[in-house]
Length: 470
Image 1 (spheres, one colour):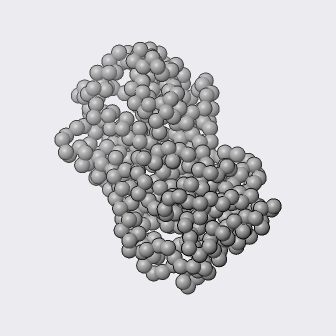
Image 2: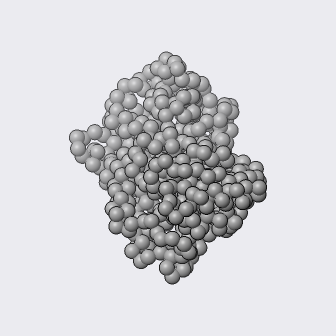
Image 3: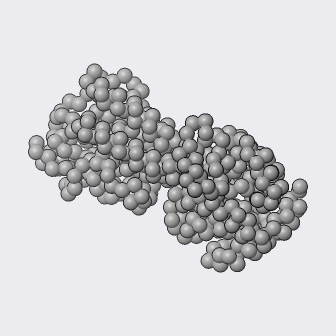
């Protein structure tokens, strides 16, 4: 079937599209729910192959644009949702050049002649922060889909290609798109009370079973830096409580990064004179370094990090623990990873290089290894060391994380999982930078292995319900 035949086919079925959607209402409802999880409300969204517009409307965009090769589909979409914008356009020869936060291609790639050429066209509508969501059918379901069409259970399609998920990923890679997440959904695309939810929420997220699911979903981003690295500015936030002996070293050993570097101490009610030491260091080094001293009004490191991030003025936000077990001299590695575009969220990893003898206690090490596996499964990106305090994120992305914080709640006193969960929900590219973890030279650890270990198990459970089993 050539392109003109496909257009005539879609024009002919456009008036009946609503009827077919009602037949598959459970599948469409669950897909729309998942996309609302992926796409923050009031984002700008372009759907290519929008059909009659229901999916685009369901994600609640602030600016919603739908394009399709079928004039009949576009006519129906415009009647259905006059508050959105619809026009006839072709993925293989896009004329729209507006940039969007999210681009949805739901079932679209099966209807184009040259998928690689189609992916190349996407750069016209992408900015560095854009996320592309590709939804397609698992080729293992081809006989089931064709049978459903023959029986009149599903609207007939003109699919030209049946691509395994790795082939789609490879085509995106060839056109300079980096796939952040890939997976499957819907073991049971029709509604059977209790059974459908069990299969789709739980079993579809289990190894082996997920590759049997109906729908393949890939989330990709354009490859490239947001800004020239030499133009990027950096804020280093240092939460500190009873760390008087490390304050001056933190300033002396923190390198200048990018066009400008500021250091923000957030003091948390110390009893050893840490606040006074912060003020002394600020006065002594203020002529050479941009130093701010703040007093924490809440409790916990997470609260201190949020206070420092809110006050930061620069492009990139970086956490440095005041115990200096992560050497400040390693911070340029983090800055390079994010400013170059290789990453959008940088997490330190203490579990690559050999540690100093007393740097991490044995039970802490075991806990880190367990939680690294758990969170790699939850976040669908490799996370080897969840508890390393050094994390780096773009300020504009952190503001989105903060805006969506109520989705997970504020139960994380560390701040680590608040940031990791938020980054995963936004589908930021997470990269780990190995660091040389060192023994603390001043003070004592403020982490309780068992009390905080119980809290971390709660985080895993929260992640299962809020990220994996949705």
